[in-house]
Amino acid sequence: MAPPPSYAVSPLVSLIVRILTFICLLISLILLATATGTASTTYGDVEVRFKDFISYRYLCAAVVMGLVYTAVQMGFTVYQMTTGNRFGGDGLVYIDFYGDKAASYILATGGAASIGMAVDLKDLGEVLGIGNFMSVANAAASLCLLAFLCSAVSSVFSSLALPKRV
Image (tube, rainbow, N blue to C red):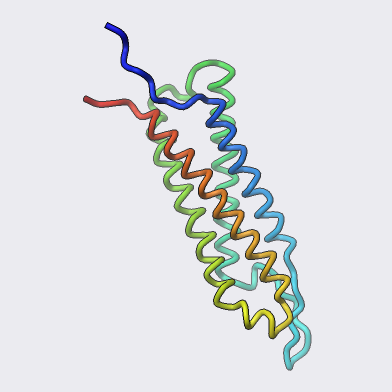
């Protein structure tokens, strides 16, 4: 009798999706860190950066956590591709699965909170003269959401690697 078919995804496909996640997160972090604006107020001009908004600080934290997790997982995937064995054996399959779930949720909430704030403050940003800052920060949040989609795909791939229990 033939062995049951394997539904696990090729490590190369998994690596490509993780690289796409990493690239989106890296660009998002660069955009967020370099976004500045000068708000014109009655008290004078005030320089605005991402750290002045809680949701953008959360976005930054989510992106950094996503970058670290994705870099570690890329290393594990490269190890699997070069040796033919999973790092840590099959015991770490559950850590991959739940780690991918947690990482994708963190990225989703970081991007969604930031986009929500940007939409709410769009008119105020135009009045204060920081519309460009808001646009760049919104682009960073959008890239985070794109990274979330890639991370969600990785999560589906890691679920396919779980041992089948009958």
